[in-house]
Length: 555
Image 1 (cartoon, rainbow, N blue to C red):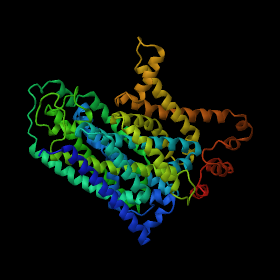
Image 2 (cartoon, rainbow, N blue to C red):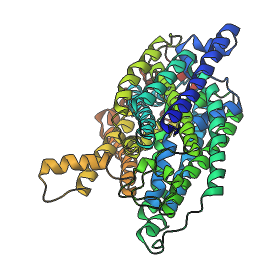
Image 3 (cartoon, rainbow, N blue to C red):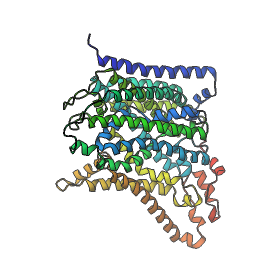
Image 4 (cartoon, rainbow, N blue to C red):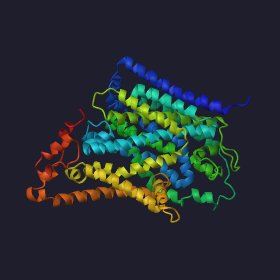
């Protein structure tokens, strides 16, 4: 009897996802019955979203890995390796590990300075104010919704294009399963399941790599040397050289605006556990992303990829083909390919529950301390339903990520300058500078895209709409767009700060009664913080102490 690879793929992938869901539900039930210290986190929105100070080093390590990976790793690194060559392949892998280290470094400083912060939005509120917090919350939610959309789109595309089945069964299944155990157990259970998902994925990836190393003996195509593919995979590929700047910047920026990563910072039991977990998680992520990219690279190297005809999401699976015949699109027809799908399913579920927990954290940052987790749970359901529908439309994953990477890069400088928390830093970078930087950067990127893509034979309105699309979703990760985004963000801060300084110097109030009264009402931060600062009359003491800040926490 002929083997039905479609049935086998569905059965094994859904089985492993059900297993992780069942384990999470049983663990949560036992945790509630035992009345352990972890069970207390399920009673409040804060504990549900942060699991503050409760997780050891290895749990944090595997959670960083599982949260960083996902089904996107099956499609994006091989695709990028083929498009940008070995330089882009290495750059992409290394850049996937850098953001975790950056978040942990910045997170340690935030914890020391604002121990009451429960999210990135809380930090921005304490440092700048409520309007800046609102902007960061909006961007963070958008960023994680895009991540959730990319994951569901990827797993659906794999089953539609590679397995040859409908996308909606697997998309609906993983969405329902991950939502069920995430809303039941919160961050604690997400971190617990991350351990299993990470170890399971790593074992299978290593096994697949060993199998590929032992069996792949495809010769180079006769026209490889000096041909188009050799140039594309070599070190002279412009996209590869561009990746040395674009990948570290864009991935770091997008990760900084993901509450799914920041939650691990709050959950770690101490600085030592956090640093150890980040080092192990980041290292494992770099190695695994490199292996996925390498598979796509050697498939192209062996002449098994036709860039004009093959699906970019399936470049990795081309390495399992046994023929160099052009147009021979890969289809699942072996156990090793089914194993790759199972890895994708496991990583997909882990990434989805991480994104959903990040959304819970966003909702929690709007609530007073001690609130019930009901509203964050409801918020996740409301967001997930339309995302599932959008995921069935089959958008390209790299294009989906480009939108949020550009947006996060525009806001990235303002957030980094927020870490300049000294008396001088608070005078130079206020909430006004934060907001001005965002507006200036996004406007500049849009205008640059319009100018860059302008065509004289098009109408003005057509040039404007096409240029806007090109700037945010069609620039194919060109380095100059990211340089403009980051550079204009810095310029926006400098211009706004300079303008405010000049305005204060020229103010009649300054000339008549000194600079203290002019600062009244101009200090960034919440109302309580502004009152505290404006009551200070010493020019050198415009600085909010930790004790004063603690009094302005959410009540």
